Amino acid sequence: MYLGLDLGTSGLRGLLVSADGHAVGDASATYDVQYPNEGWSEQDPEDWVKACRSVMSSLCHKYSKEYRSLKGIGVAGHMHGATCLDDAGKVIRPCILWNDTRAAKEAAELDGQPAFRAVSGNIVFPGFTAPKLLWMARHEPNNFARVAKVLLPKDYLVYWLTGELTSEMSDAAGTSWLDVGKRDWSEALIKGSGMRLDQMPTVMEGSDVVGPVRREIASELSLLANVAVVAGAADNAAAACGIGAFREGQGFVSLGTSGVLLAAKDNYAPEPASAVHTFCHAVPGKWYQMGVTLSATDSLNWLAETLGTKAEDLAKNLPDSVTGPSSVRFLPYLSGERTPHNDAAARGAFIGLSKASNAESLCQAVMEGVGFALRDCLEALKSTGTDLPSVLAIGGGSSSPFWLQTLANILNIPLHLPAKGDFGAALGAARLAMLGVSGRLSAEVMVQPSIQQSFEPDPHFTAAYDAAYLKYTKSYSALKELM
Image: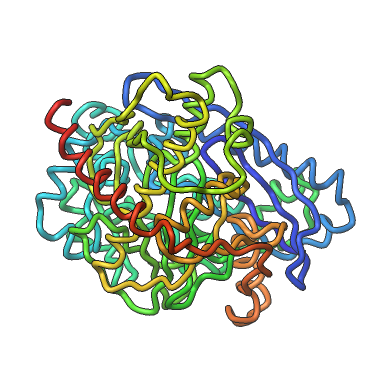
């Protein structure tokens, strides 16, 4: 048996997977995000440990036989978070999360150094790790002076399990400290942000074995001795492993809290100016590119909360079929935007409201707005030479057939909905553990799921959605002048 742990922004999920790749059972635990100031987003790493204890205890009780035959553990997690440890290995301050925008000024300064884009292959976004440490140096100098190591969130769980200070390529690529082409830390980038190479953990490939679970932790968690922990993966790279997207031409669209359009790459081909992320894959010798819109289902959840209802109820009230774009336009920039604008100050808007506008039309506009933002991502990917003939659809928003058909029309490529099952980041993390422990080949383990339903773009509406998308792209620039 193998275990995949997925450290999300709001909770931790553990998935038990058999050696033949089938999910056996899962458990989860939740925790909170703290917002001490506007634009700030933090978590206490101890909450992740508590959640891990809870998940492991639940799995042990519900699936005792399978749990006690564990051979390996993989950990996936949300990216970019700055978890700072002192020289005794103690957490200095709450982790600054991926959606924290306090370091926008510092990010712009680092991005102004030509080496950062040239070596990391990416724009330095405010949510990345390096600008957060520069912000600490300026605003929390006493804390900054104590920093001995900086870990990414899932790497802190690996540290708690093994006692080893490590990271891996797919997560480290989102720090602005990694030479993404060479798959190693860049001393020039580290020094350029006021850090030292010795403050970085050892960087590994995702399926590399970090070490066994520490004896005292194994005893506490009722694990057998010598359960191996692999380095794991960033959440999106792990999701790509779970969905079987690791070759050129394979990819997925994720309608989660944020929206992601990801394409696997056989080679390193960055284009930072496009605001496309170019990161190392968790699979050795592979990379991936992705465009990100920061508020996907988050936009729908916001609308539902504002209207005093539930997102699923809003979605259920939509028509059975898609008949073209709404007359209302929505810009989903509730938390700023990444691809293609790199604008932390961007804000959302409804355009074209009338007395006829109701909950149904607003819901459709929100789904289309997220779709247009993902079309921005697709166009940015195309500008780098990436071709996506079709994609798999995952994430909570993929439960809405209306949304998927709308998205297929907007992107003008087929979307394939996997058959029900586990194929997300937790499965990807378990698959990496399987690779590391068994030595099997990626192609044997990271297979794609069977397809439940496909959504083909409707050619009758291609011109209408193209025209609506053009208006959407102009809306950002026009409203930017008014903000």
